[in-house]
Image (cartoon, rainbow, N blue to C red; front, top):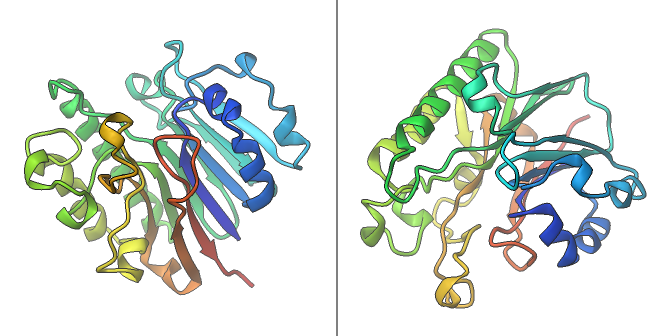
Length: 255
């Protein structure tokens, strides 16, 4: 089973750049979009349905902002939109799918803001999600959290670590929340498999950052420790264009 996460930075713009051709060729079983920046009536999902996907969307109340979507081939047991807190849920940041083998959270985590004004909001979001995951782990559920975390965990996860220590996305108070998740029965499975590999998933559009290899790893799969034995690989597909982020795919092997 292949699960792909991709912040597409606007579904309408990404479709104009031809991401449907990549989706048709790669054909993941589940595709988690972040930052769709549109409401369902603003784009035509029929092209995805022609590829045998069901499409669900959780758009932000604010036009042209945030939002997540999921394409899937196998119907989940349950679908939940949001985390149950209106201040987060009005921004369309979460779709939660229940499958027989795992709970899948597709998440667009908040950005802390250029002036750091949204950092407290971001940290509250991390805290609420972890409480929900703790409860699921107590029920012996396996969990996959994927999406754009808007945080680079360690210095290996961005090109210019020292220059960004006071910028959102690499603040100590943001990074420590990744540590908290790893202390609560989660694994950063890409980093487990590739402890020394330098790859990025996001590049600013400025200063030819992508061409110059100046990026950040912001898009993750945090998985329950018990799922580790089911993982075949995690692939950062940094050759795929269409957004300022690239897709990342988790390969799982279930009987």
